[in-house]
Length: 260
Image 1 (cartoon, rainbow, N blue to C red):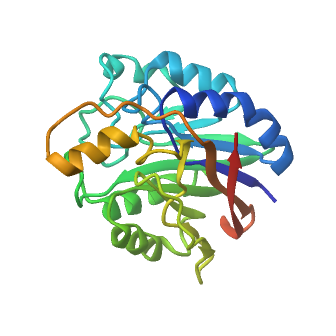
Image 2: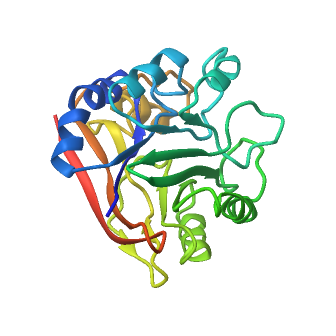
């Protein structure tokens, strides 16, 4: 029975350094067959570079997903096509570079992986995540044994609605973007593993990974300022999903959290 480890948003140097340091041991401990990580905040807290992507892949990440910060780092739009194990959100405009899904194979098990952006409170132009997910599931049906869908969304209601919409069709629907791990992990009636947010891999002595003082000051006076990546209480946060190769659905989900 394949076991898929998903790591929530990797934030800045503290997050990516801890993932690189501990992933091999964590993978062994959990007997994870496939590791997926959202790394859209891995470079200075916003975006990713080719160099960082290769470092994470070299440390044992099998697939890297991205979100609304996909193009934040200069020149990444010219690097992404060379990264075979990295996909951008599937519902961005078709003219955007990058892969709209990935297929990872392990011991004969083929897992399709894709991300859809939400359309509530996110600035990037994107197509309907529900219709995009429908189209991608139809496209991947004959190519994969199961499909993992990442819901990169701000609104919890949008994530939950997508989970119900895909129940019985996707093996898993796991939320990212808000950086706060939720306690609603479950297997929906149709066999889809669901979690509203996997949390982040980064510093929890922070405000969503950023320096507490800077963020609080902006809430107090409304002035714009830089929000440096914080440093303290670094953790790895995510979930482990037990998938059934015969049905293409899931039979178990558990949250994963590891403190430095």
